[in-house]
Length: 266
Length: 266
DNA sequence: CGGCGAATTGATTTTTTTCAAGCTGGGTGG
DNA sequence: CCACCCAGCTTGAAAAAAATCAATTCGCCG
Image 1 (tube, each protein chain N blue to C red):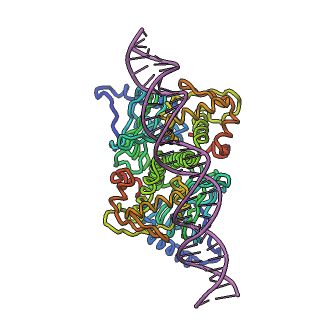
Image 2 (image 1 turned 180 degrees about the vertical axis):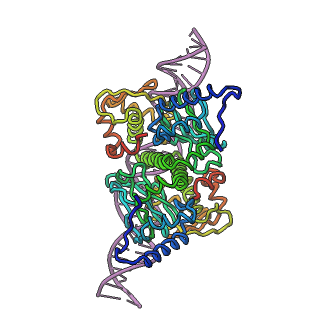
Image 3 (image 1 turned 90 degrees about the vertical axis):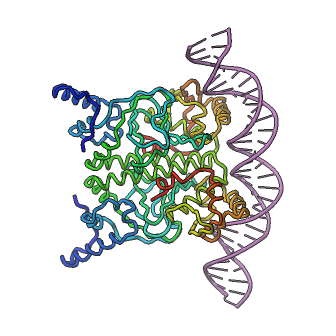
């Protein structure tokens, strides 16, 4: 029942133990610790998790981590870089459902036996920590703390999807863009922008951002220009500069303060 | 640690036992059994769940089950009727995030200590089975099967939100409407429409449906008229008549077959 | 110095909203 | 039993928002 891990068979017991310690250390040092599926794992159990997981996997920008229709072999934690969860319907324009940032967990399915419902694409160069499905499911069925935490974690993803839905339904382009920028700012800094001239990474193309909020790249470009001309933001080369935070918050058209902690916090 | 339930203190042990049996029977007979949080509960444990839950609550159409901003006291299973999960942003038009139909579980939060992120409104007269939060959380922390199942159940809700997002982003009114009708058909019958002249309940106002897919009631009315004039559907007084299933599926603009089982199944 | 994907911009068309005015049908009170 | 009431639906005309299409331009990389 215990899932196998890829280890050279001829290593002695000593090295095996060392390997275990290494893995355990890696998990304890992991940026995702305390934030994803690992959060409720007591130090005593972390060894078990460390055994389950595969070594980190690095992928270049643009590569698919998994694609719609594929079987579901593993769940993932992002260690480094940005991942887009997205659908592509029959060669047409896709829709970005969510982004997974460092520390975020993604890839859990309603039914693990079933093909992937969406694709996960590396937006930047990415390092992910894969957790094989079988092992993860056993862990869930055995450790109630992990399972309970995971349920709430997925509820958070659901809440984010709902916020996304509210944002891209029945609101103007300006509002949508402002809201998206604030969300992505928040998810990196863990606070709303308040000081003038805050700077943050934003390694997305206009096309991708457009697919996130349901606008064409052309219209998005115009909307961003307007915001720039009003001295609210500047966006260039993977970086977002929020010149006037209050104006941006106002432009989003919602009071985000109460929701921020709950919905965007990873 | 075991959660208390409201019982007259002066009842003898015999009646108490009878009450327990009643609750247990009610849970075993429940339409939500096998479909919601109760699904993985073995008959042995169902008694425990039966002790946790409050007696069913009936609400007239239009009533709020909980509202955005309120504290989260309980989670719910729908026994009868339709519930809309919705946001209302500052007096403006709201957005319907999802519907909960008989057998559906709703109300779980990312952080249970936190105010509600959305409202739940009874669309029709409704009967729900409330599960007090405290007890539910204890159950989750104790019973890994329930917790693991719940995680996947919430993942299903997330997937449905994603499908909703795809549907209402960057697609025409006709496609959105067709997709919504099919989804609501499926969630009641558990199959896609295929025979001509299938009939199903649809107790929603145009305003509500519009808020679900991001259209005004006016435009929705026009879109429905077009579908009616083409002999595809008829919709009146709470009932949907799918005259030409294939045309409706075609109008939705997506191949729903592979997704249906996973995304819509409650 | 090209080459190329991404961003910008303009002109035009399409889609959807908005606003406002009737319509309808089921429920209520006289 | 009927008149009326009212929420919800329908319809029309005009305005607004966004998509589309088609060039350019920009900036990075080899």
